[in-house]
Length: 228
Image 1 (cartoon, rainbow, N blue to C red):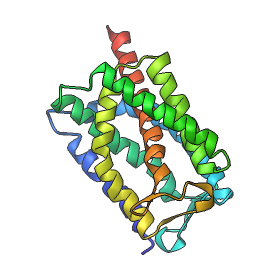
Image 2 (image 1 turned 45 degrees about the vertical axis):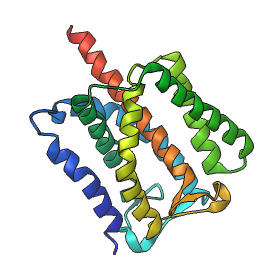
Image 3 (image 1 turned 60 degrees about the horizontal axis):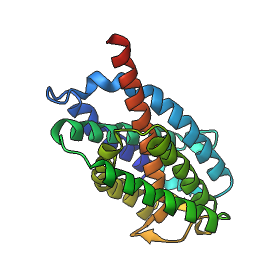
Image 4 (image 1 turned 30 degrees about the vertical axis):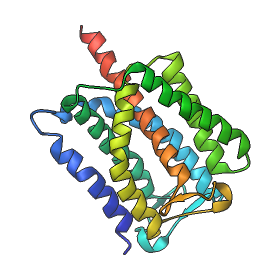
């Protein structure tokens, strides 16, 4: 089915778009804060994606894509960096509205520190595995910046949103890797799978989402300061 990956993208974003107009959350009013960060983050991750595709870290099954490619990437893969962050920021904003409680600062910092330490260890030990080293190396830098340099207050809410986002993550990535639509070269990753999903995918998604949420919060609060 050549439209499989395209259909996954459409279904990923369909309900967040429709529910954006719910009067309580009114997510559509904050769409304008999503696009700048999505562009910045997307450029970084697409550059990474192109290199990984060229060097065979992963590839795409031609049976499940429509065949339109830009710089060797299927158009569906490019859409992925729009649909998934949009859907996850929607989850993040819904939780901000409906769940007023957030993780205590100590718990938030502990989670960040554990992931930073794990990222540092895996980056050093598996420095010859491209997917592993780039994923955890980038995540290490991002979390250091947000947790200790910027001291971002929204990280506690992000970790809650990330946990909730794991449900659609397992559905979407489970399909992509089980069919498979995306094929991984296990010589470039740890070779550990959760079901059919590479271990690194969890942290690749984490890096993608925390960057998008970080920019979303920045542009949202920049306008607040400007209009104050």
